[in-house]
Length: 376
Image (cartoon, rainbow, N blue to C red; front, side):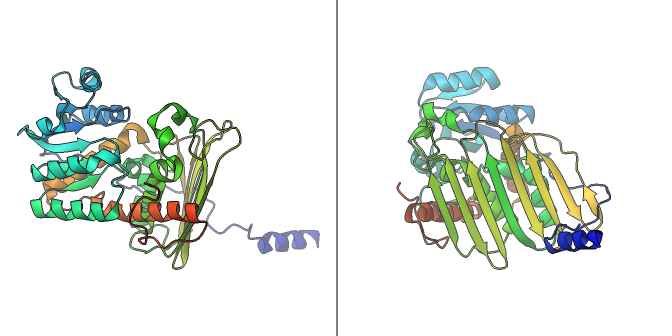
């Protein structure tokens, strides 16, 4: 009798197994970054800040040719060149770099508040562009750049490198293949210490978490949900006790979709036991990824057939950066729009802007109704 009651209770609380428990071979998915075989344009880099070490490391490993670097602080460009591309030309004015007829693709890695004129000038010079994220501060301005690129016949992509982090790339390919069916839920929970920003320029960004950092996760939400339109987003932010940086390190967002939901939780003042988890729930399966940080993740796929644990190769840094540039180069070679196009990325920014507005207002906001970064 006790066993029957226990079984009933287990069933009542939804603890009974809902998928096969046997181990099965993980599906082979084409999640690794790609570079087109017959297309190797000369690349120019504008902006040589800290993150560009990952850009250049990825490009060098792939055998890409960076022929010029530009930064208003000349020594910064010289240092990057010395480390990765010693023969590259050095500029302190981006217009001089754009005047180099050898260059076919420009990687613009400056902060967004000064980036738009550079993107516009690069497009006008007939060069394809990879823009750093977050793409723009104004959706209307972003749409204008998209139209300009189309008119000039060049490709404009955004460096949303998280899409090519091995775990995220495998997950989005699994969803696209239909392995988990129709999505019901996408949930991100990140618990880590982001206090390092206290001594950087990021310390002056009011929404350093929901904007500069979380754009990767808003972008992944948009990628996984595909053509589904978000209905409303509700978000909040708060300062953690004893935190050192100016921006609030606690933030969260809830997104409504028709018959589905998404949640994003950021505890950026976790000093002990960091963990990063992603849950994707579908009608035919679920896929989870868990690890201590962005670079070390283990993915598990649950379906009726059983449980799969793919052995993933690579890390977000630097593979994600090769993924964004590689996709742009493939799109140019194949004469198509890149999957990380600026047009596509505006959907992610729309969701991000709405979340920030919601956090400021304390009320739900419809994505697309906020055209400019709140507070900018």
